[in-house]
Length: 99
Image 1 (tube, helix red, strand yellow):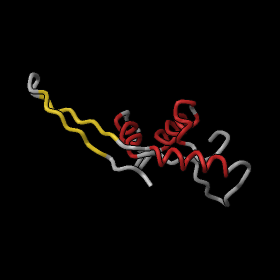
Image 2: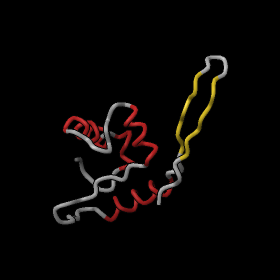
Image 3: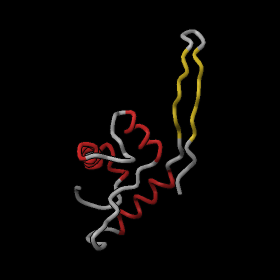
Image 4: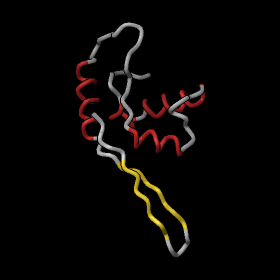
């Protein structure tokens, strides 16, 4: 479902530094998240519920901010929850309400 994550590497000759950035086409993920939000209205799905789908490029951004999304501790989970509840990252949510 997700677009391929691409690493873009640039060598800054003047400073002799390498800069790495990442890009990804996330349109399919965002469309699937939107459909999931529409279908999740008022539905419970047992004990476990998917609350978001986070594209790789966003996970890398959060990891660069110091949030370990791969093996989160309690503080990482708190910070991820805060981000997912914010309007800035609402497009990642797959359900209604707040976490």
